[in-house]
Image (tube, rainbow, N blue to C red; front, side):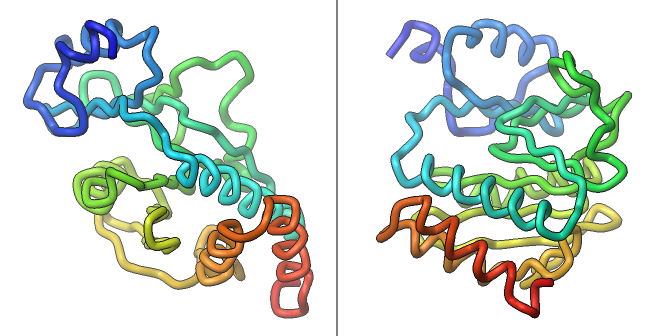
Length: 217
């Protein structure tokens, strides 16, 4: 563990100013870390990513992108990208998607996505192994307030997806995606379970067969 990591508390929300938060993340440039800022508090996540977390991350990205492609839905997926309202909010979700008319909103060459200039993603996904309660709690409130249309939390331990549709700074549980109509959350959960026993090529072939069935066409 580096000196930077020992000096900064991680995996908890800490009351701090935006300026102190900027200094903290500047000190983490050489670390593989995620950072969040919300309601005058920051959270830093530097824990090693587990094998199952990494696998679920890849399966979810593949599944969403494949479904969008088969349905003819324009989609741009982003992996651990920073979205920022300067001085107010900052987040680095594991996965985010811009869909349909928003898919080509962010120009190439963009670094941090400035949410004072660009729209929020349509879909945000957090992969949770050690951060489940926070992903379901404070982070969900953060994404509600940002105006994200849909938010999924992938519970790695239980191969479960807790999905929410968001509106008017609130959220409700859903069993089928609203931003990707026809995509059942249960199909994604089944893909995650299969990935524990199959390689990802086999899981991908299974997903393709499911998405091509009549009810998904």
